[in-house]
Image (cartoon, rainbow, N blue to C red; front, side, top):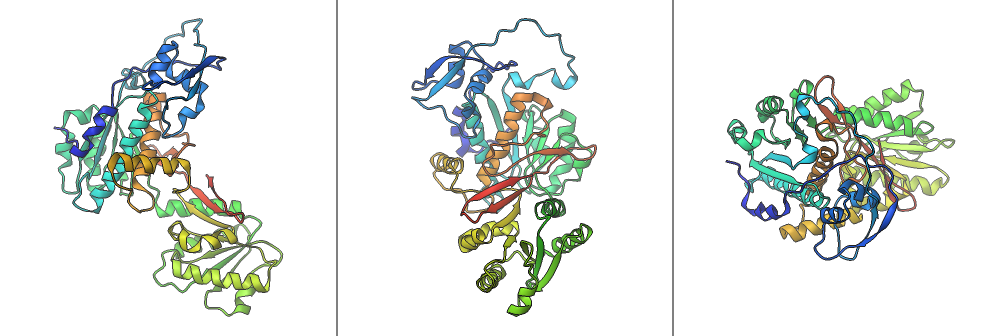
Length: 451
């Protein structure tokens, strides 16, 4: 039997079946306004005016924002209904489209360690709660989701879980967390033509030949290659300075070595200096005719602090020197200690996520999480609940709008923390390839540059 954790049962009220009629809608003239009354829903308002939910959402684009809630007193634009003048020719339907999930409740399965025994379980419970919040948000947009959850712990018999009748009926499954469960799950989703989203970093060679698998995780090799590619484009006219920080524990050598090779290949200037160098030798590594971009060969905070101290001293003696910093994802955890210098040195941090505690979307999700679960999100980067929200919202809305043809190839512009955009991996599944530069500007702003 499907095992749904007891403390999630109160979410059952969120998943009411809703019939959604999707139609091709062109540009609509607005025929009037509607002031929302207490307990009114998007579905009810669309039926009141004999229009589709999609038409209502197109006329009111703010409804597409993640976490959107219909509130009493809100004023909505009501479009004219589209009148179809001719019947379109019937479209060939293949075996995968005989059951159009765009016109029915989407069935979502979650197979993750949902327990409080250890850190894996606690993190995945929080991730799952984010998934539930996404289901609640899209339900307010008129999309119905039926969620089944299984506690796929590390010692669980995954084959026994997959024998549950509800598993084979899923349109999409999120999981697993452990590589040893992939063989069985890969074969299962391939047999039943179910999309499988792997949300975290596990070894999944099945991605190479199973078109139903989607993997969010990008290996360090992928990330390094993408970062170098975008670095040479962004800093084409800069002089690069690599600082050796004498950190014998550092794992960044592969990145700086590969970057140096690429800089040489592209005939881009690069100097190397040492964190222990005297002021004169340290200063010689910098260009006076080009802007400089500085990279350390460690991601640790203590060495970063020393580097900022030396750079500040350099700016005192040579204030016209232009210095930018280029860091590592770990630097996002050091914001409290180094934020002033991030701004001062026009810092760029490559990442596959960005948690912005000051954004209204983040604040709203954290507040709703606290209301629903009577606790705060774990203090981790990235936030697991927001990750779950972004993953579920992206895929469920995609399945609702495109059905089984949805491949995740279009990016999610309204993500809260985790951008997603998938591309085909050889002849197999699809892999997320989105990357950000988190940019701390000299005027004390933070912007994200998405690739």
